[in-house]
Image 1 (cartoon, rainbow, N blue to C red):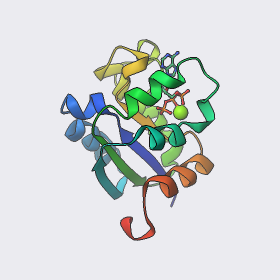
Image 2 (image 1 turned 90 degrees about the vertical axis):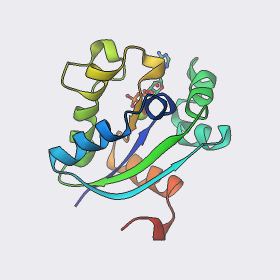
Image 3 (image 1 turned 60 degrees about the horizontal axis):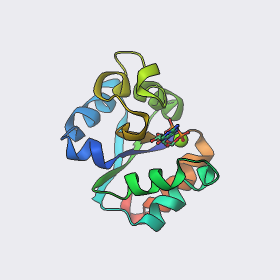
Length: 137
Ligand code: ATP
Ligand code: MG
């Protein structure tokens, strides 16, 4: 089965949305195979979003992602990369349909509560970045 990397960003954790978000992935039918909570360093955040380093919002993004506790997860299931992104919604919460996580639970693109890998390749890279081999089941 396919795997993806999902992270609840500092605002999602601060707003106590961890249970809500995990519940949505579980109810859909995906299986949680790795989970931990940590406060990322700016270096870890920059590495995670390395592909966006030329964007004008990059510095703010690194600050945001390293501003508090992040819940790092690996989820498994059929088409979980693509379907996980559907559960999450669009990058901009204003464009996310109600029923999606961002569509229901946030307002600002710069505080959009959750990350999901955008391809199987980036999923593999991100799982390797955030998890050791013995930390996933
Ligand atoms: P993520 O990678 O976090 O799942 P995404 O894949 O939907 O989000 P990306 O283009 O990868 O979107 O952007 C990464 C993150 O950068 C966004 O989730 C958001 O937090 C932030 N971001 C993107 N565009 C903007 C913007 N125009 N202004 C501020 N922040 C932005
Ligand atoms: Mg992305």
